[in-house]
Image (cartoon, rainbow, N blue to C red; front, side, top):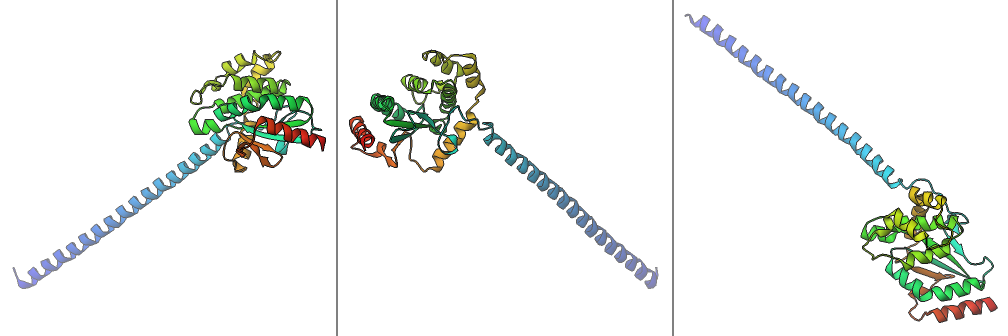
Length: 257
């Protein structure tokens, strides 16, 4: 073979090698584009899933339903259930949780004096119901019992049912008040409360949204815990010198003045 022919074949091989390298490079770029498009699609799908999940979370947080205040609710945003006469010179604001042991202790110590003063028209009590223990211990008993108490307010039986719930309070870790049957059973201790309307209200959670709104107000208020008991603007529960006798004296003096 002549030198000229050998040179021609060598040049052809070199051109072929160059074309092969170009093809490899093109294939590599194409694969990169495919991978990039796939990643983008996956990321896009993840973003959509994230939005759906976020929206699902929002729906869960709003699962308590509409805010339906109990009959006669008073105070800011209608979040207080009042006991006593509006004309009373003193107002006691009480934030309570029916699962809270400290709330039960307060009720046992101060209830006789509070009843005496409200019946005498000297004290008005505004009860705000919260579900603090549900958040701390888990469960739903705080919210369910608060809803049931609001249902009792609809029937004009709040004060009596309020006392029954604290008198029969389960152990803090026992979520017995999450059971509608138990709440309805306790209504039997209050004359005229266990009616079809009350049962429906309890079972349907009619006032769950209202309880949630009350609980949010408690959190925004910056209170340290339950019970929080205010006489006017003074937190008497934090006053180590406060006693039922002292509270009675303060209220009676205000009534005279």
